[in-house]
Length: 388
Image (tube, rainbow, N blue to C red; front, side):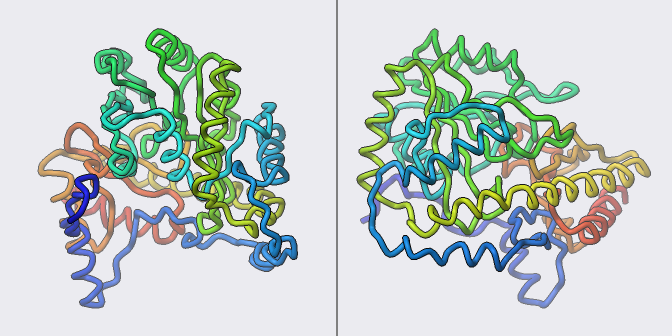
C-alpha cells in the first residue's frame, strides 16, 4: 500500500523509549540536547514580533513563485550588511524551511537513483530528505586531527557518473567546523572537473565562536552553488517558517537553474504572505538573539572546560561555530548504551555520536545553548558517571 521511499523504521529508538519511561514515572531529566532557541530561556521581543504579523497587506494574494520581491531584497540586504557580499534579489528563492530548500534543489538536480555526496559525521536529516526525493546519499569523511578537515581522498573516491552534487555544511553540525579557504578551492576544482554542483548549508554561519566573520558561499562564482539559510537560526525563530536558497555561479547555469527553481516553487506556492511581510522585523531580531546565543555558548563552553580540567577521562573536540560540542569519552560500550546509562543513572539526556554518523564509538554530543545552570549540573552528573 505504501511507497518504498517511506519504508523507515518507525519504532522509537531505545534512548527515546527510556525517555518516555522516565517521563511517565515523573522523573526530572536534565536535557543536554535542547537545540530549540525558543526553549532556551532567551529574551525575545515578543510584542514586536507578534505585532509584525498584523499587516493588512496579508489580505492580498500576490503569488510570486520566488517570494515577494520586498522580502528577497531584505535577504540580499542581510548579506550586504552582515557578510559584505552583494546578492541579486532575483537569485533568491524563498522557502518555508531549509529542508524544503534541499527538496527543491534535489528535485532540480537529480533523477531517481542519482547520488549526492554528504559529510560524515553530520546531521541525520539528510537521509530522510534523500529518501523522499529518491536520491542516494554517499558519505565522505570529515577527519579530526587538531581540528576537523575534509578528507578529499574519500571524496574523490566516491564520485562517479551518477554523482550530481556535493553537500557541505558551513559550519558543520555537530562538529562546528567551517570550510577553510583551501578546502573551498579544492571543492570548486572537484566540481569543475566532474560537472557537479555545490549545496551549502549555512544556517549556523553567524555563530562563529571567535566572532570573526567567515566567508559565505553566496560569493562563490566558480561553480553552480546553492546556499541555504533562514530565520530558524539567524534570528532564533524556527516557528516563523521562512528560509531561502541563493543561487550563484556561472551566469548561464545560474539562469537555467533559477528558471527551473521558479517553476518548482510555483508548483507548491508554500510561502506565507504574513511571514514575508513581517520579515523586516523578524530579521532585525537577529542582533539581540545572536548576541544572547553566542554569550550562552561562551559561558557553557567555559564551564565545560573547567569541569573537564578537573578529570582525565573525557575531553572535548575543538569547535569553531554552531551550537553543539562533541565529547570524546572512553569507548567501553556503544555510544547508545552509554547514553542510555547516563539517562538512567544520572538523569541527564545526551546524544550518542552514532546519531550523527560518527565512524566509531566514544563520542557524545551536547547542545551549548542550554540555560547555564542546567548545563552545569547536567555535565556534573555526566562526567561523574563517566569517571566512576
